[in-house]
Image (cartoon, rainbow, N blue to C red; front, side, top):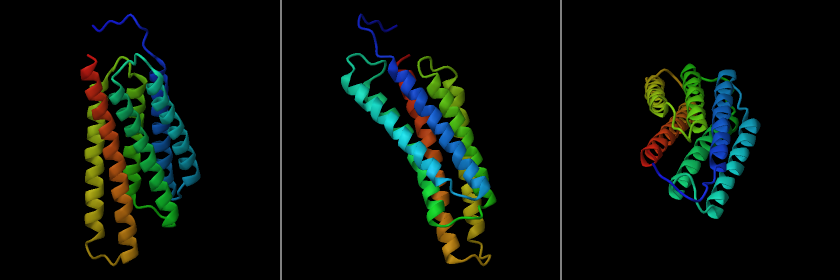
Length: 203
């Protein structure tokens, strides 16, 4: 047990909880966007700005905190990686708007649902950051979702390039979108791995 005569700054837990809520809301919004076939980019951009604000608040709190509940480097890495998830989801919405997507493929819809589930798991993990309650189960679930996302995108890309008469523009557009969706999910898994590392250090 680690003891300290100096009270630790507990606002970090509240800020990470806010980040988790924003991640979940963002990935749910992205999933709805894919299911509906419209970008919802203004809403995703608003969530991205809100997450930026919380991330900057975490950075500033690190700079002025004498005793943090975790190592400063871990706090900064976690905040930055969570923020990356929201940035990538917003980029998907931006690309959907840029490419004027009005009809979304079934694999992309399925991938969006995986991302929404991963967002819920991350929000719960960040809400329980102080106790790391059920962290391993959540990490494993996110890993499962990441594997499922890999399978979906791999099969979707394979089907696209089977010579079924799709235009070059369609192929380029959806290759880019699938890559972004996969990067978003990979970053969700990275957040879970960062949380695991922090839990081991603070055991």
